[in-house]
Image (cartoon, rainbow, N blue to C red; front, side, top):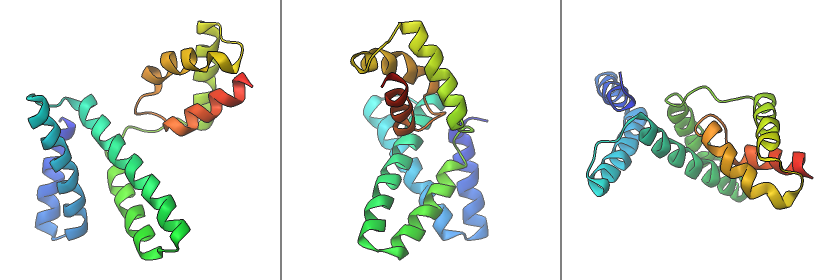
Length: 147
């Protein structure tokens, strides 16, 4: 079952159970997917759908930080629920230790030795961890190891 099919089935299930919040989150994601399909004039595969989900999760995390600073607990709670729903469709995320191992291997592969080589490392590293680790975490670990 593709991610698109899974989203469709979960949307139907949310309709049946009258879970309006879950339904609205899934509809929003499906709408984003549909807009991209229309723009690109192709059906998105699972990797493209994961990219859309990643973008939606990143937007919510950024908004979450802003709402926490502003003291809007109602919106913080809502965004956390949305993040939980969206995260269920993502593959299992790598732990910080697993990311460190991959970063160290990549640093050795590209022969990086200083922060000036960070672009080379990130370019080689991101395809390996795409969808499996948060970009901010990866960037932070690369910075630490190259420092």
